[in-house]
Length: 467
Ligand code: BGC
Image (cartoon, rainbow, N blue to C red; front, side, top):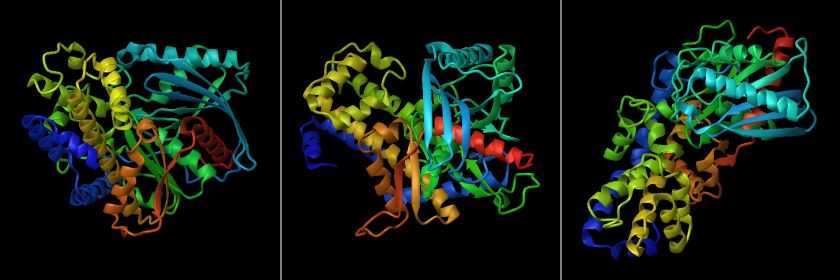
C-alpha cells in the first residue's frame, strides 16, 4: 500500500483503525495462501475431468482445438448478458483473419432474471426477429441462417448444439430452465416464430474468448472471464477427460469450459470472512459458486456494502446519517470500487453521494478507498489461482491468457495485481525481464468467437464427423 494511504489511515480514530486492520488481515491472501489455494484448485480441476458431480464440473464443449484462421462464412450470434441481449451478423472472410461485424443490443427488462422460461425465450426470439428485419437478413426454411448462441452459465453438453443447464449463476433464477436443454428450448421458440434460423452451436463465453483470441493470436493458452462472473476455458486432450464416454481417439484436442466459479464449494481452503458467508447466505443460490462470490464483479460491490453497513451500524462511518440505500442489497457496483481506487477524494465523495446517498467526510472517503483496495486486491489475487492451476496441470510455461469482462477491462489495478500474484505462485524470479505468461485483452468472444465456432462445427459436419 502507498505511503500516503498509510498516513491517511493513521489519521482515523483508533477504534476505526483497529477494525480496518482486522478486516485487512482477514482479506489478505499471502503468497503461501495463494500456493495452497492453487494446489487445491489443481486437485479440483483434475477431479472434474475424472468424474461427474465434482465441485468444478469441467464441461466438454465439443469445440475441437484451435481455429485455423481460414474459417469462412456468415453467421448470426446471440449473447444473453446480464443487462443486454447482443445480436451480431458476423462475416468471416477467411483470409488474414478479416472479419466484418454488424451488431445491435436489446435491453433485457429488469425483472427478466426471475421471470418464466417462456418470457425469456419470447424476448430472445423477438430480438432475433427485429435484428433480421433491421439488418435486412433473409434466409428461408431450406437455407436457414446459422446461429452461435453464447450462453454463459454452466451447461452439460452431449453435443455442441445441446446443453442442459446445471444451475443458474450470477443472480439469474428463471424457472423452468434448470435441468433442461436450453438449446432445445431456444430451437422450439425459433420454430414457433417461424424464424429462418438454425442453432448450430451453444458456446460458453470463456470458450468464445479462447477461440476468438486464438484466431488472431496463436499464443493464446486460456480464455478467461473476470467480469460479473468468473471462469476460464482451455484446450484439453480428450484422452485426459476420463469421465467422457466417446469414440474420439486420445490426442483429439477439445476445449473445456471449467466452470471454476464453483471451486471450493465444500469450503476446504478459501479463507471466507463473515461478509462472504453473508453474501452467500442471502444470494439466490446459497452454497453455490463459492469462489465466484469472493472474486467476481457481481459480488465485490456487495462485499463493500456489507462491510460499510457493519461499520455504519457501529457509528464508525457516515455517523448519524439515515442511509436506507446502504441497506439495499447490491446497490454498490464494482464500478464504485474502481472509481474509489482511481479517483481524487472529491470525486469519491460525489460517487458515494450518488450510489448510497451518503454525505462523506474526509475520514469516510479514506475508509471507503481503503476497503475498495482491500476487497479488489483479494479478488484479483484469488482470480490468479484458477489460471495458475490450469497452467500447472497442463504444464504450460508461457503464453497469453485472453481475458474479458468488466473487472479485467475496467478496474484500474486488476491486471497488475493479477500478474504479480501469478509470479508469486509460479515462483518467477523477482528480477525477471518479462513475464512468460501474460494477460491480454480477449477478442470478442460472443460475436467473433461464436461465429468461428459455428464455422468450425459446420466444417466438421461437412467433413463427415458426427460430433
Ligand atoms: C458462469 C460461467 C461464465 C462465467 C463468466 C459464471 O457465473 O457459470 O458459465 O463463464 O460466469 O461469465
